Length: 131
Image 1 (cartoon, rainbow, N blue to C red):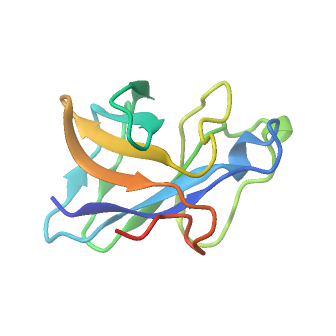
Image 2 (tube, rainbow, N blue to C red; image 1 turned 90 degrees about the horizontal axis):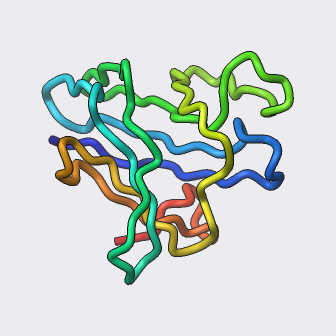
């Protein structure tokens, strides 16, 4: 599977949950169904990870397609404006921000196995640390 993180963006304000997101892209040749996938967050160099939740009902990423996973919920003005730039939005509806600065490691998992992993680096234009 060729699912990859192409952007990680932190929010400047703890209240604007929809200003924090990740964008995933399917670089593979087959569709990828995210139903049942989970997202973990941890720190670089640490084995301790926290599960943010299970993506349910999920979505299907077609080859070459991108999706933005926003931290907040739709229809909540307090969570901030929703980006509208042609990338499909999916809402995690989490209660708070999860990016805790440089070195935050995000992993998309399916049945406990890693599908894709990325490290947050705010110095990079995409927010994704170079490998």
